[in-house]
Image 1 (tube, one colour):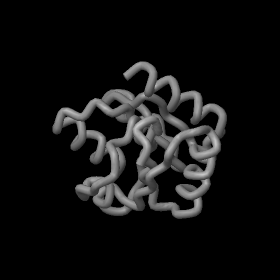
Image 2 (spheres, helix red, strand yellow; image 1 turned 90 degrees about the vertical axis):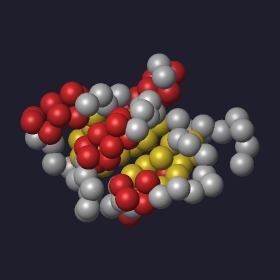
Image 3 (cartoon, rainbow, N blue to C red; image 1 turned 30 degrees about the vertical axis):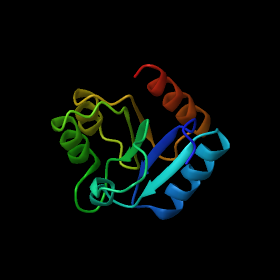
Image 4 (cartoon, rainbow, N blue to C red; image 1 turned 90 degrees about the horizontal axis):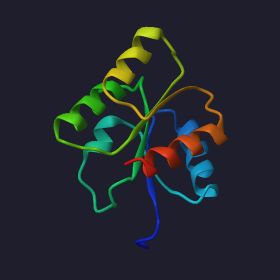
Length: 124
């Protein structure tokens, strides 16, 4: 794997959405790493650490909010961008309280997501 690539993790249990985001990210020059659950993301792998994580809030098993809290408790500083199909004010508030770089309702406007990822990585 080339060292000059920027890796972005996509954690979403909707396979078609995750694949679409993967294509969008590759077209924007990122290298996408797809995970179907929070638990899969936590499994140690030889893959490089992502520069940003696009994280669905509603996942089977551990939720996206729980995963983000878990990562924070381990000292992770990787920016997280939340996406959700169920936009509720209290969930949005919780996401912002725990420190998300951005928050989007599905379907996510591709250009805005790429801009948010680029900004989150630059501000890291």
